[in-house]
Length: 118
Image (cartoon, rainbow, N blue to C red; front, side):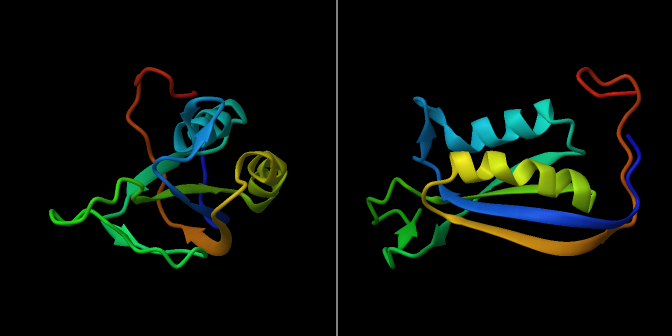
């Protein structure tokens, strides 16, 4: 898949303990994005944060927080990202979903990697 030029980035902020049918929610989002043929998705685990509940979650040693923030970032064409949004509506019951216009400068995979489309 080739992707350069104008694109749309969707960022989903959830907690690491959020689940979908007993499976980590971030994993379900990534697998659905892959099944939808989107250009790529990455999951980033935060070390500290708070959201709509105003509870601070942190990884600091003296804290007992286990539900650290997680961000799932997906980038593709506007059309493909917007077509994926109904799935996010189904999956994300708590959290934040953001859309940003962006420009893809370079998107290149390694040839012959397992699971990559040609």
